[in-house]
Length: 353
Image 1 (cartoon, one colour):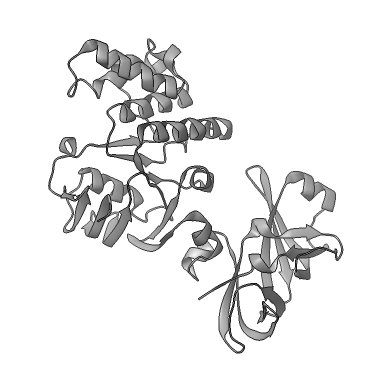
Image 2: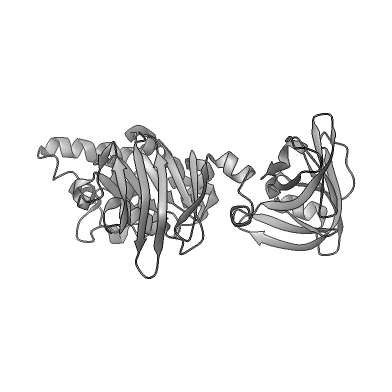
């Protein structure tokens, strides 16, 4: 039996719903829950912690059915985007609040608070009120308050979304260490894929209250389920038919392109090919490399996305996206209409079915 099991969870609040939701987590897992806004991710967290009672389904934690237990009996903590610190308490008192129901010894409480404050780098903030803290400092205090009680399960609902990129990166590193130190299992709702790559060992893609795909980040991103998951993750998806085999490579005719894949398939088989945009290299001319795929096309659009650029390419009837750095974008002098070559390895052209 898994550490956490959500079995056939159904709930309709009017605005959001869960439809036969099921997922599993092993002890120590870090699950990133991703999906479009309104897909029920936050509702799932609030049902697991007990803020909502499901209409159907069960929640099993460490082999115990906790579906009908009140939130304070579940040994689960939650952190939201807006931290929800008590404004009339200083940071020390906020963190200690979670311990006072469990521990009466003041010295032990002080030791526990200082330990988690040290892990999250807020020892010097313990005497301050929340109103005097920055957004990142408030969120570290909220994380400390949730972790200090050593919950069996920690739920995170977009805790970094209101922070700037540098602060998010710093907090990810601190959270990763804290999770390891406290041996906590985590469910983390996020729209930021950087959270996923930095922290998670499992990914669950949710749409309209249903799990569409689950697995480790590498397999989900490189071999997404066709259609919705692939589109949501921003993967290039081309539909085609296997033309022939060349040694260990599969040759596919897809939307007017000839693509080589290292994945096995049979001649005549209809397949879908997935290519991650960050695995596509752009060049002004045909280049010699070990990459088996070199495709010529034209730039149809260039868009800035945070600190990178998304380049859209038109190649026959196909459209392919690449993600490159600002330096590469400048060196290639990219603009709509410019001829460009897209280069990627056969091992990066994954066949999905």
